[in-house]
View 1 (cartoon, one colour):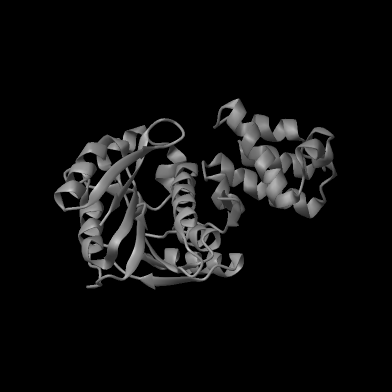
View 2 (cartoon, helix red, strand yellow):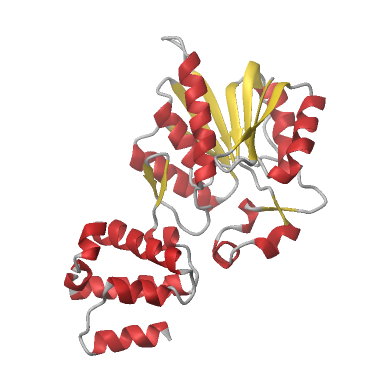
Length: 296
């Protein structure tokens, strides 16, 4: 239906309007989300401010721009996330390049990055250089943001996905961050000792039995290997990373996780049993226990 409608518009040289765009998208999203997506699309891709949109400047787009907008709307109607359509996601005040193959950066992950930057910058002395490892870097949003936010830092990032390695390196280059991206399996890490001041990870933590609660645009487009763990082993990556970090962190080095709130008590217990100190859970802006910090 959407493709036919758009082709008719183009055939009769009719122009897109903001009202038409969001009402069309409201066939698959609620009204508020449809309006938000269309505004983001018009701003990021066509440079139209909210004022421009309300003043009718959508109708002044060139014919070539209408063709591009047509293609984007078709993709959005198929539930493809707007970040993939735009190849852009905002995170920690920076525009990151994203494509299918890496997770779309989430606001809660930005909260974790903010916690780390605040703690590190508040404790640095002038000549300190902080060595940081991001495990399962994806788009590189954590590693790049930490590199840019902590000037006296040396940041490395691991991932096993070829797409993630390519995209994270591209983001580091585009944003001018010094990040060493390597292909490493988090479940088979090297035998490092006293190497890092900080290790951070947002590993796969969604259980298979949670699929039914997830949105279609996530399930159909975002990479499963970055999302899911088996129901019978939800702490798989947390255990492996904690085991590695127990030797690889320097004395009093910090380990930071983004977690599935359902397993906060299990993760806290696991880390305590492995001998970590000061194991604490941190709430996100919605009051969920989303992060864990501990000290080697």
